[in-house]
Image 1 (cartoon, helix red, strand yellow):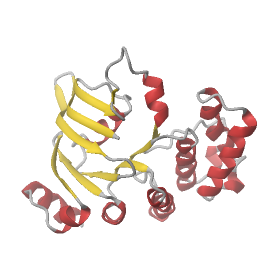
Image 2 (cartoon, one colour; image 1 turned 90 degrees about the horizontal axis):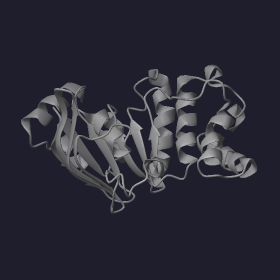
Image 3 (cartoon, one colour; image 1 turned 30 degrees about the vertical axis):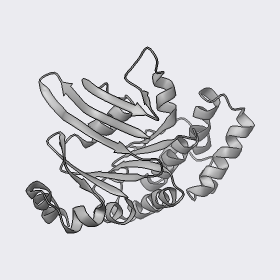
Image 4 (tube, one colour; image 1 turned 180 degrees about the vertical axis):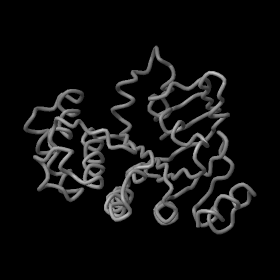
Length: 241
């Protein structure tokens, strides 16, 4: 579904991604782990062009999304749901309004249909009773679950999660991870940047370990966590497990 070939990203003289080549199959859950500053979030943001790569190719279902003459960036983003660290909900809109605005304005759904879909998604994330609450009245975990529902409202083909629990208090992390586990069981294609090693070990089909802008090691979680081959991977895991 997603194929990345020799991807580079530079911020002026800073070379953040140094030739990433990987792929994501339909229905696959890929977790990206590694130390802070290794390029994980930048890589994720390149997948839906929130960051413009400096070189390389990204194919979504066979279409090169960096071919701006033939690929519509807004259409690409609509197909790739994104959940950020900091929720990014519109503070002046209720949970319901946050979820319906995209389908109405981008997908051109009627308001009634968008709201029906939104309530279904609020049920899915366990927050129907919070439909008319504003973000400031919700806990961090509740806000992140609304953010997941908002991303799902666009019927994306894949979901990208950029450290979705890093801004949450420890007791709120489980409620967000449980929603993500349910999505994985339903077959949603997911790319997850996370420090939650238990989640990566339990849910992912494949784990990528990134360091200094490159993929150092990748494989099934049982291999990467239990039998890492690279010394840098071994050093990192010894500190976090």
